[in-house]
Amino acid sequence: MKRSLSQVLVSVSLMLVASMAFAEVPIETGIIDAFATLKVSTYVIVFLSALIGAGVYTYRHKKILKFDRLLGLVTTLILTIVLYQGAASQILDETAKVCWVMTDANDQLISPCAQGRESLANLIGLKSLYITISPRQILDTGIAEPIGPIAIKFMIYFSVLLSSLGLCTLFQWLSKKFFIYR
Image (cartoon, rainbow, N blue to C red):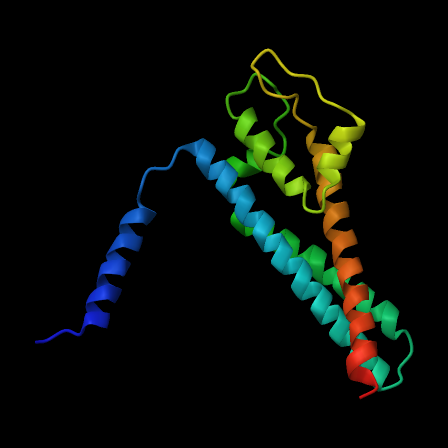
């Protein structure tokens, strides 16, 4: 039985993927990777939610229905929150979920947890702005004092909602400018 080159390549790549799935990954790397994956997913969620919200606006505006802009923005907000919560619950495993409540600076996982949380909170630069306004102290362990989980969650949700509303407003303007009156 002859196999084509593409069949051989597919089978080899499947074996490599399967072997990588069972590879041992340090817990610190897993935490950082989980938050990085959630950050990329959040960008996609914000874009898609804003696009769908702008689609609702365009449809309602073409049909001359009331509250077209408002319903587009509300659709964007609801989709953003629901999709972000769904993605966060699926992407962050139990170890990364522990990071949301971790505040002890002497814990061995505080460094990857703080790095992952703060990277996610810097979606549109709010964490950088916060650090600029309120510099952090360097701890005895050599890392900067981590920002509290409540402040991080506030930064994340504010960033996600503000960016999705801003992007939806931009898409609404583009829709009105280029699609509605054509």
